Image 1 (cartoon, one colour):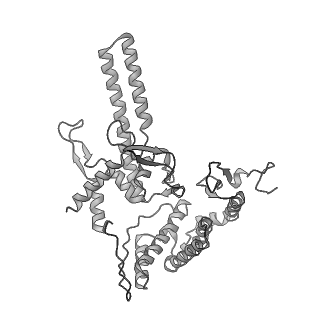
Image 2: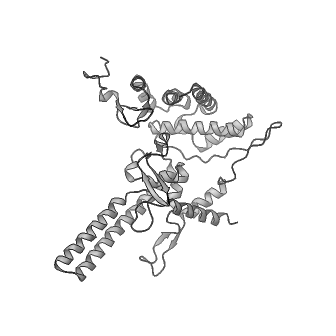
Image 3: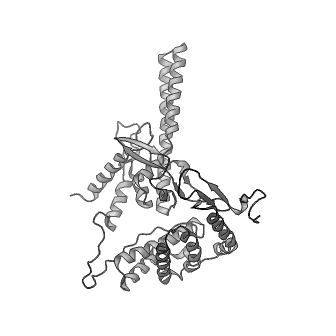
Amino acid sequence: MSKNNDAHGNRLKSKGRIAYKNDGRKKPFIASPPGGGKGVSFETKEQAEKYLDNLLKNGDKIEKLKASKVTFSAYCPIYLEKHLAKCKKETGKKDLKRKVEKAEKYVGKYPLVNIDNSVLQTAVNQLAEDGYSEAEVRKIKQQIISVVTSAAAEKFIPFLPVYDVITPEVKSQGDKKRLTAKENCLKKDEYYAYVAECERTEEAGKHAKNPGEEKLVHPSGYKLLLILHTGMRIGEALALTWDDYSQESQTLFINKNVVRINGKIIHQDSAKTSAGNRVIVLNRTAADNIEMLKKLFDRQTADLKYRKEEELKKAAEQYSGKELKNAKKAIEEKYDDFLAQHKYICGSSTFPYGLGSDRGLESTHKKICNIINPK
């Protein structure tokens, strides 16, 4: 019997846990690290056991690193050990090692907490000057961000920095075609204009419920900003509930999706693909977007309660006796249903504030794009 298992052969909780999901998935064994956290999927129980044993073996080393200003290079072996296990093919493992080695060459000496926007921009500029193709520069840039993101998720650094880095265009080499950014991407000035328009407010008119109060010009503006700053799909954003958000760790758990089938919005209790199940570590800007969406959510909750009380008052004025009892019961049941569906981070902006619409978000996005860049 292994020292990590109990008398029945089960993994001790303090050593991590292994769960078996008998639902037809290719990797049914889920290894959850000690102390909780996101599990990692494996094809066999032996692979899951090896993964947890390696975590325990490096536990003291990791805690010491967390207590110091660990450098990018010092964290890379931990990052590779975790992510190489997810690579199915040897070619994938080699490519990951290659990108991490190149990333180390340019930012390896920096402590993780110091790898901010300016450090990353300097590294990207140097990569371009050293003759790497634009596509390769983007890959290495993304690899650096991936390593720092992983470090933030494991609390080696307190917060994920906000990165706003421009990849320089690389001059054509010989007969090679010059690489340029995709035409449908926001340029830097367009990005700032887009954010400003999403956040723009106006004074409510004199016939509004709260005249003179500042309100968003685009009620879905902060939902679009959250998508922009996290890279989520629209369906993933619409499916998010407040149970998927951890304010303490500043993370979002992506495990659901919303799709449109035959013109109807359908909520699915699974991601678009198995790889879609993931944890997103929020940068400061995305965390601010979430906080604003929570304020809007709380206002909607208050509005639902206000509407309910108003309907109950009207019922009391119109009915009496058994009719009043039945009317109150119907109102209570209706609003209980509304409140049960009022749980989405990117829910509908209109009463009764349930599941949001993909077409509504896309329409607002196009409207904002036309405002900041009229044709």
